[in-house]
Amino acid sequence: MRSSMLATAIAVAIGTSITFTASAQSGISAEELAALKAQIEALQAQVSILEERTDAQSDINVGTQENLDKMASESPKLETKGGIKVTSADKTFEASVGGRIHFDAYAFDRDIAATTGTTDFRRARLTLAGKAFGWEYKMEQDFAAGNNLEGLRDVYVAKPALGGKFFIGQFKPYRSMEELTSSNEITMMERPFSSASGLFSGRQFRQGVGYLKGGDNYSFGVTAFALRDAASARNEGMGAAGRLTYAPINTGTSTLHFGVSASTENANQGSPNMVAAVAYAGRRGPSQTIATTTGASGDSIGTIGVEAAGAFGPVFFQSEYAKATFERPSGGDQDVDTFYVMGSWMITGEHKPYKAGNGVFGSAKPAGKGGAWELTARYDTIENKDVNNLEASATTLGLNYYVNANLRFMFNYTSGKNEFTRDETGQYALRTQFSF
Image (cartoon, rainbow, N blue to C red; front, side, top):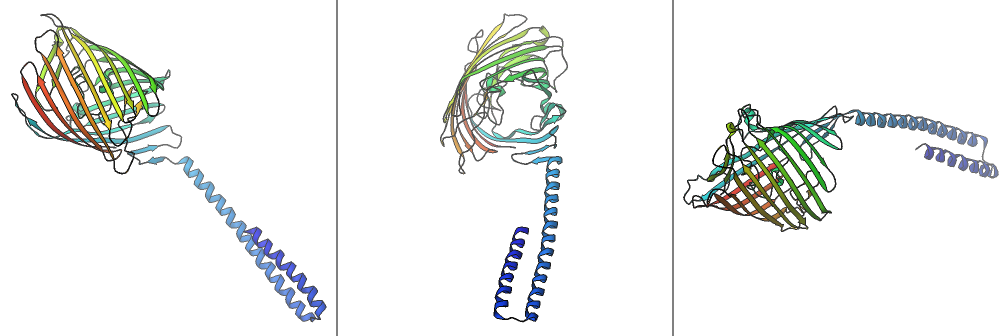
């Protein structure tokens, strides 16, 4: 601005000088020259005033920008993409609020067992998580699971250290790939029999300490825990679990995953009974207990599992096999085997992402405005090897529609079979899922 004013003044001066010369040659009078000089002096005064105003405005602009930069660096950062997150300016403190709503409706093809089709809030959770003074925390309440302590899920503090992270509180032990996959990202509406939906029935969350470390293609987690969660009775039972995963192939479009896990659950004074029980025709459908270890007996359950999974472009597969020995005070120990194979195809071409640090797969995100479609299938079986015909299986076919990153609709048809009772029941189930 100032440069343009000076240029104008110079141009005026040059033009005036030329005018003076021309005027002298043409015989202009002294009075006319004096008038021209007066006009030039007036223009020069206006230029000086404009220059002063320009300098003052520049100082104001610089000061305003400095104040804006200071406010940005000293004010908390608020993010609302997909949830609510607040971070302090120095990043020492962080807090986020999230949640999930899983609303189900289902009906049954009845056989021998009595069933009731209805609607159900499968999950209705609020989650508070964040950081403070170098520690992380998470507290999650599922209102669909019960009041007060019955609905507590992940409740822990964590500290990054030794290349990984230590956890103290209540969380899932490191066992079963599908168990460790978030309920927002599981392929089917319910998990298979090798998880808390069967082999670890009623024992999904445990209180204790854990350590998790992961890299670009591996993860390693160990847990020592009590045989209780926030809502269960105090007891002296103890357990431990560990899981190791490795992905020899892990690129943006191709992943091949392998894993192995082991756990032990040792009953002691006050321990509750530990069972393997399955709802073989979908949640709220008929149930069959496969094996039991009596808590008061002081016996234990030992489990080993192996897993394989992969995602190659829009095609995904996942499989786990687990073998558990349920000790019993009399009648001999009982071995339980469970196995499932699951696959899906993203019709619209999306790819399931791999979370190498946890050794699990996430759900695909729609690539276009029309959302994403996924066809799914799973075969699942569990058997007590020491009791004749104590076996159940389930075949599930499904269709998922991802409206966007937060909203998904799921349809599952499950055909369940109980070899022990000869019951064959089918379930039609629909889920509306929203998470943030």
